[in-house]
Length: 356
Ligand code: SF4
Image (cartoon, rainbow, N blue to C red):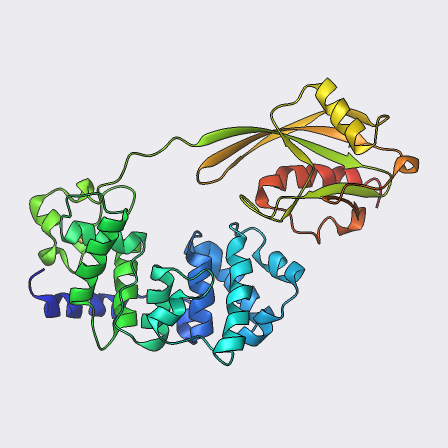
C-alpha cells in the first residue's frame, strides 16, 4: 500500500470520530479486554454487552475467575454458546495465577500459550491492553484488507491470513496500535460491510483501496466454497416423575462437551425403540407419547429434534447410570441447559408447573 502514514492517520481519525462507546472501552483494563474479546469471538456486540457487564460484576478479576464455581461460570455463559470458551477462561486464569502473579502477560508470545487464546485474541490483547504494535486479524480485518489490497487468493486459509497479517504489520500505528486494530474492525463492522455492498462513499480510506479503484469490492475476500451443514436427527425424552425431571450429561469431548441436556439419542426413533430405550433405563412401565419437535442450527450441524413426553411413577425411581440424574422440579430455572434445548425447557416447565 502507498502512503502508509496517511492511511494510518485517516483510519485513526475515523476511529476517534466514530468509535462506539462500549463498557470495556470506557474504563479499559487488560482483564476487561480479554473477557470481551473471548465473548466476541462467536457472538455479536449487542448480545455480548449485557453478558459482559454481568460477568465482570460477578467475577471482577483474574484471581476470582481462577476459583469460580463451575456452575456459576456456566450460568453466566448460558446463551452465549461455545461453552469451551468459558472453561478455557477459568483454565487460563489459573495459569495466570500460577505463572504471572494473577495478571495477564503483556507479550504476544506469552498470551498465545494460554488456553483459549489464539493469534487474533493475543494480538487484540497485546495491542489494545498493552500498546504493542501487533496485528489482530479477525474476519473484519481480513475483509477490509483483502479489499484494500485486492487480494486475489482465498483469504481465510493460513496463507491468506499470513498475507493479511503482513499487510497490517506494514501500516499499523506504532503510537496507537490498539486503536488502529479497533479502527479497522470498526470500519469492517460499520462501513466495509460483510453482507451486501460496502459503503465506499463513506469510507475514509477509499483512496487507498485497490478494490474500490477497480470497482469490484464485492469480489473480495475470495472465499472457499461453503460446505453444506450436516443434518443430524435426534430424539429427546422429556421425562418426569411426580416431583423431578431427568437430565443427562453429554460426553466430555465434542459439541456442547460436558453440558447437561434432556436424554437424547441419534435418529428419529419409533415408539418401539423409545420403549426399549426406557426399558434399558429400567423403566419398562413408563407412559409416553409423541411431543413437540424443534430445530437448532450450529455452525456446521443442524439438529432436527423430535421429542416424547414420558411419565414415570415415583415408586419406580431407581439407581441411574452415571451420566443420568434426577433434578428437582424447582431447579429447572437454575440448571444450565444449552440454547438448543430452549423449546423443550419451556415444554418441561409447563409440565412441571402442575408439580411445583
Ligand atoms: Fe471497503 Fe469500500 Fe473502503 Fe475499500 S473503499 S475499504 S471496499 S468500504
